[in-house]
Length: 128
Image 1: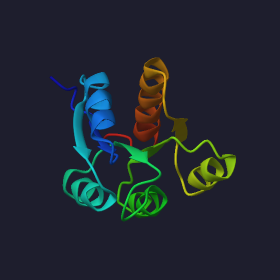
Image 2: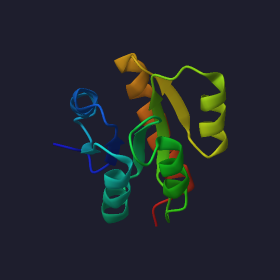
Image 3: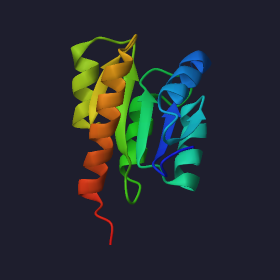
């Protein structure tokens, strides 16, 4: 059972979607296998956190990131990528990503980053 924290994972790698969803099962996790499906899901469900792949067919992760950051309130976005190019990470961070995690990743690092990102969301969006 989740904690009520909504997390959306957007990645075209279905095995990764399943693995990350299992890793974060203490939260309410949803998954989308494309940027467009993820944007639709984010609009409908208003997640606090999005884990987003950089490279996907169709609408890529950086374009999705820009659209997510314009939502109100915007989710905190953590990028996931096999791309270790520093330029890609810098671009993602300059567009508003909270963090950039390279694949393959350490599950403990993902958990720590997710909790820190949710804390960031809470600071940006205090409950009334």
